[in-house]
Structure formats: C-alpha cells, structure tokens
Image 1 (spheres, protein in one colour):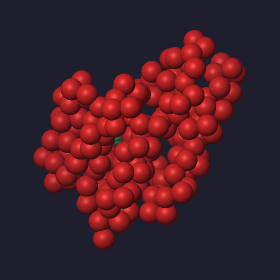
Image 2 (image 1 turned 135 degrees about the vertical axis):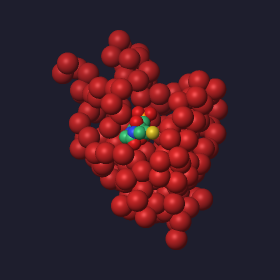
Image 3 (image 1 turned 90 degrees about the vertical axis):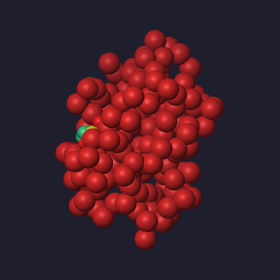
Image 4 (image 1 turned 180 degrees about the horizontal axis):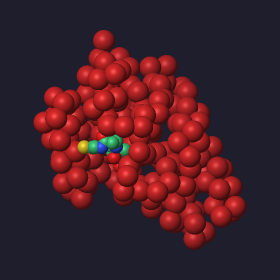
Length: 159
Ligand code: PNS
C-alpha cells in the first residue's frame, strides 16, 4: 500500500493543485491532501474552509482524502504511515525552495519527496496570484473550480 501526501496551504485550492492531486491519485494507492500552515503566509480562508473546498473538489477521487495538520510535515508522515511527499514543480523559481524543504525533510526524518512537473497550462498559477487578481476585479474563472470561485467572490466582497 503506497500512501503519499500532497501538502500545501491551499488558500484556496486551484486547478493547478487539482491537476497534481488527480495525477498523484492515478499513481498511488492513496493520496492524503494535507492542509498545513505556511508560517510565511497569512490566509484568506480558515483551515476548515480550505478543507471543505478541497473535499468538495476531490470527491470524485475515491482514493483521495483531506486532512489538517498543525506541525511539521514529517511528523504528519510518520503519524499516517506516509511513504512520500508529492509536490508539483511549476518553474525554476519553485526549485530552490522546494529542493531545500525536500532535503530538510529527508535529512531530518528520512522522508522522501517526489516532484511532478506541472501541466504547462497551469505553470503560472498560484493561490496568491488568483487572490490578487480576483481582489482587483480580474476574472479567475478557469483557474479555480467553480465552487471555489463562488466562495472567493463572496469572501472578497465582504472584505
Ligand atoms: O502551498 P504552500 O504554502 O507552498 O505549502 C508549503 C507547506 C505548507 C507545504 C510547507 O510550509 C510545510 O510543509 N509546512 C508545514 C511545517 C513544516 O514542516 N515546515 C518545514 C518544512 S522543511
């Protein structure tokens, strides 16, 4: 049984995340999508809201489940018998930081990281840019699932 984790802050989940999650689900027995804290970022949605959105948009994948964890990703892996972390790599700009995290996690806990190349359709896409674009009236339909777009529009309107 190969269980992997797709970790992230998912604030909110984008079509780029979904692409990686669904491709990981084809390659492994089980995928846990773990909502974790990135101390470098402040969030628009609460962790529970992000989880609800993720559950909604991954419900068609029987082998994907969503979880929340406050702590180190390597502790999550240990507690959940996870074989590897799966991450999407968009561009060279992602590489330095992702490489550093992967090496830290391997060095400290022996946890492996597998990188998947992002679909070129989504190479430019990030939750931060989606939020910024939407906040100033940009059209982000096509970049996030419809249910996420609804919530994003509501949340930004109430700001
Ligand atoms: O979607 P993001 O914000 O790029 O995801 C980053 C995330 C949440 C996966 C990363 O910050 C993380 O693993 N946080 C959990 C705490 C942790 O383990 N930090 C040390 C990483 S070497």
